[in-house]
Length: 267
Image (cartoon, rainbow, N blue to C red; front, side):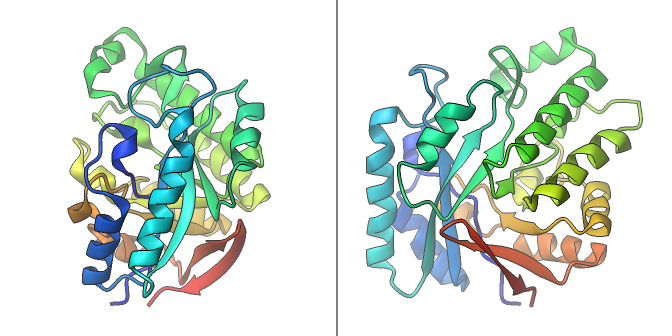
C-alpha cells in the first residue's frame, strides 16, 4: 500500500515533541512516504498563553528547520504549514500569521472551548468533572463549526478531540457533527483523519467512524495526519486510517500546494 501524505507533524519548538524535522523526514523516507507536512502549533498573539507552542520569535526558526529538512531529503515532498488554534477574537492574528510565510496549508484546531481550559490537557482533566459532558461537546463542535466557516483554514484537525479521555455524552450528538460537516462542505474545508487517537485513552482514530461516514455522505474532502510528536510516530497506523476512509466510500484525499487543493487517489 502506498501511504497517503502525512500532513500533521510537530517539532521540539512546541515544547512537547522530540526529533528535529530532518529526523521525522528521514523516518518518513524509511516508511516509503513520498509526501509529508509539518504543522506545528502556532504562536499566539500573547506570549505565555500556554506552554505547548513556539513563541512569536521562533516562527522564522521553525520555517528554517523545515527548509533544512527539505534540503537534506530532496526525494521527499515536504510541505510547510501550521496547526492554528481557532479562538473567537483571534481572527486578525491568524490572518497576520497566514501572511508571514508561504504556507502550503493551515490546519484549524480547537483545544480551548472556554476561557483558559484546553479540554485535551491531561493536567486539567478534573475540569471535566465540573462541567456537563454534553455541554462541553456542544461548545466544542460549535467552535469547530466556526473554524470551518471562518475561511482561514484548509483543514480541520482531530474533529472529535473531545473524546480523548473517554468522556462521552449520553445525548445524540449527530446534529452537532452534521452542523460542523455542513460548514466544512460549504467552505470546501478538508477534515483530517488523525491517527493519534489510537495512542490516547479513547483508542480510536479522530474522528469516529460515524463522523467519517457522515462526512463521506456529504462529500467533505479528507486528509491524513499522524499528529507525530516523535520520529517513530510518523505515518503511524495509516493503513487503519486508509481502511476507515475506504469503508466510508472515500477513493481520494487532498494534497495542498501554496494553499491550493489537489485531489490524490487512495491506493
